Structures are given as structure tokens and as C-alpha cells.
Amino acid sequence: MSHSRDAPPHAPPAPDHRSARVAIVLDHPAQQFAEAFRLSGRSTVVDTTVLYWSTDEGAFDKGFDRSIRWDIDLTSGYRWWAPDRPTSTRAAVALWRRLRAEAPDVVLSFGWSTPIARLTIVWALLTRTPLLHYSDSTWQHSTRPWLRPARGLVLRTLFGLSAGALATGTFNREFYIRHGMHPRRVHDGVCPADVAAFRAGARAGERTAGHLVIGYAGKLIPRKGVDELLRALSLMAGREDWSATIVGDGPQRAALEDLAHALGIAHRVDFAGFRNTSEMPKLLGACDVVVVPSTLDLRVLVAIEAMAAGAVVIVSSATAVWGRGDLIEHDVSGLVYRSGSPRELASALERLVDEPDLLARLRQAGMSRVERFGPAGFRSGLEEAVRSHGG
Image (cartoon, rainbow, N blue to C red):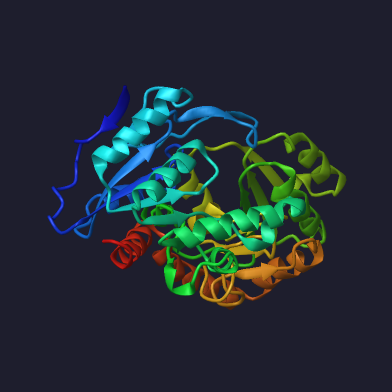
């Protein structure tokens, strides 16, 4: 038994007979991909079906320290399928049967560590179906150095047998190349956000002159570096021209609130708590700048969302959203500071207070840059990769 949506509401038109059949395989529905899948479903170049291992949209999230159910539609408007029991042996059989029935020209696997990814990779290699990879992995973010040699060997073998990959940014592209994939087989892709929805939240009119509204949005866990942001703000405590809002929840919340009190900035920092997806465009649009102070992070979705909402984004060097041609280029489309240096972050924030022309320039550049990191960017990358490998 399985669940499927072969004729969803607002279903895309029947694909052209020349369209390449593409099976997109991932573990579960995710908020950042819903609109991209809908748009890809209307393509005349690819005929997509999304295969999920589970469609459970609610679960306890350890990072937010609460049960989460996203309040936006994740599964309508495109064709999808999922087994009834993702933990059962029957699910594996059902998946292989579905893949055989779909007879895709190309398979796009999200990652390689989940059960559905591994089963699909084996199926694609056995049937010699061109296999593309999609991930946000980066070579510099391995947290288990002792596993690098074995992991590298496995990935080098896998990538050698694969048709190619969709890279989600500068560091991700380098990851594939370092593990043996020829640069010509690594295609430009994006980790998409619903740019249009967040653009709608952008504040109209002028910003408040001489006052900087600083924001953070995400999980309150150690690697997100919110304590570093608070320490940077404490270095600006003598100034009256800023305020901050921390949106999110998690196991560190109480400790972070205590730290704000200890640093003498609690009256300037609002801990707003968890907010669901539909609230985020307005919240991010109310910020002049959004800081991503992570000490270890990959493609940080909130960076795209904040830029679309009209905020200038400052990211730490430990994220993977910056670099030449990537989402954030220092002093071009945002600012990058050295991770682990609250003083450097404070200096970046003070620049934006003291140089309103810089704030306005980065805001406009960011809103322009982010356009190619939306659903259309995902679809065009997928179409280009499929054309090159079996489409």
C-alpha cells in the first residue's frame, strides 16, 4: 500500500512527449521545496514525480525543543508518492515497484544517508538509470575527522558511478569536485526559498533613520551562535541606536536570556519565541539587518528569506552561503565576519548604523541577488542537469 497524489488540485498540464521523466527522491516534505516542486511540475522540459519516505508533517524537533507542524501547504500542486509504512520492509518493496512503474529517465537523490536515498541509489545503479545528487554537504564541515578517509572513499566511488550533481553553492560545489566529480558534471542549483512570499513581507517606505533593528531567526542551540550575537551586542551597549529581536526557541533559550541580563542588554533584546512559517515574512521584513552567527552551518535558509524580505544579512564565516558568486559576497550583497569574533560582528553592525548609504546599497543588492535563489532557480538547474544527463 502507498499514498500518492497523481492528480492534485491545480495539477500541472500533461507533460510534452519530449519531457524527461525525473524521479525526485527525499525523506519527507520540506517547507523550502514545496513551491519549487510545484513550479518544476509545470515544466515542459522535465516531468517530475516526488517520492517521499514519509509524509508526516508534524514531529518533535529537538532543535526547537517542541513539536512542530508547519502552517503552510507542503504537498499540493505536484505529483508525489509515499509508502504507507516507511519503517516496514514493505516500504522498500513498494519503493522499488514505484520506481519501476515510473521508469524515470533520471533520478535526483536528496543526499545519500537516508533509507529512501540508499534504496534509490542502489536501484538506479542496478538499472543503469542516470543518477544525480542534491545536498548541502561541504568539505570543510565534517564533524568526525576520523571518518573522513572511509567516507571519502565511499563518496568518490559513488560519484564516479553517478551522472552528476546539482550544487547548492560555492562550498557544496567544491565538495563534489574534491570527491572526484568532474567540474563539468556539477551543475549550478540552489537551495530554494519561497522568495515571492518573503518579498511580500518587505517593509514599504523608509527605514527609521539612525536606529538599527537587528534580528535573528532560528533554533536556540549552541551551534547557532546566538551567544556570540549577544556578546557582540554588549559591545554596542553604550549606543542607543539599536534594538534586537531573537525569533525562535530551543533548549538554550533560558541560558541565553540569562546571558542577556548578565551582559546588561536584556532591555534591548526581545526574545519573541517560536513563530511558524506564515509569520516569518513580516517578522524578517521588520528588521534592518538579520545576523546568522552560526559556528557550524550549511545552506542557511533564513539568509535567503531575510534578503528577500529586505533585510541586510550578516553571516559568520562558518556558514556556507557566502563566497564569490554565492548568496553573500562581502560588501557586495551582504557582510561576512570571522566566526568566533564578537568584536568583528559588532564592528559590522556599527558600520550599518553609521553608514546609511551602505545599508541601503546592501539592501538593494541583496534583494536583487536573492531572485535567483528561489523556485525558478531550482527548476532551471534541474532542467539543465537533466538535459546533460539522459534528458
